[in-house]
View (cartoon, rainbow, N blue to C red):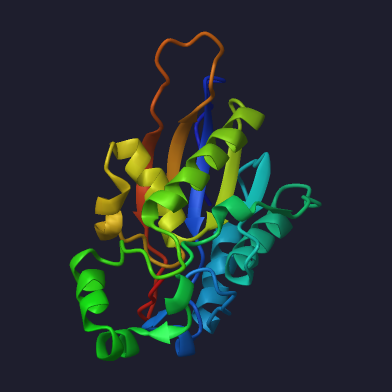
Length: 227
């Protein structure tokens, strides 16, 4: 069970979790925002997140809406004190759209588009597929969404259950790291990180930066996933 200290109303505690391990048939695949299912391990990781946050009073539990994220969000809602929390989906937290590459395996990409595969490997997946999004595109929708949820619950705690590039967008913002260089940030399936996210105040001359307070609590037990 996680225990969190009291918060100042100048910040909201944002807990950002990555969904659990996906089904084996999707490993070494480029799935992006396809609505793929979890493995048995991924379902157990989702339940474990609910158990670990069962003693934390959450103001909101937000999911991208895809089933692999909603599994953990549902487990958390179910085990919250008092229960009865409403499901909340925010599509701004969807995974990076892989466009024409979605559904293809990494081996197919290496065989059919060797130059694209070389870029993928060199940039650790921080590339834009034909018809898809770039990491910067993801950050441009994720960061305002995090600002929005922070401003709704100043001094409170909000859980966002989403995807790897959503996590990378948040961490890169806190570290002042260009999002295109964040491919080495590897939060495992089932992992969670914590931020103190500033609540915007009228008249502030210089906006505060989010503060990363923990990163990479590892719940991965097996398997390799691509995004």
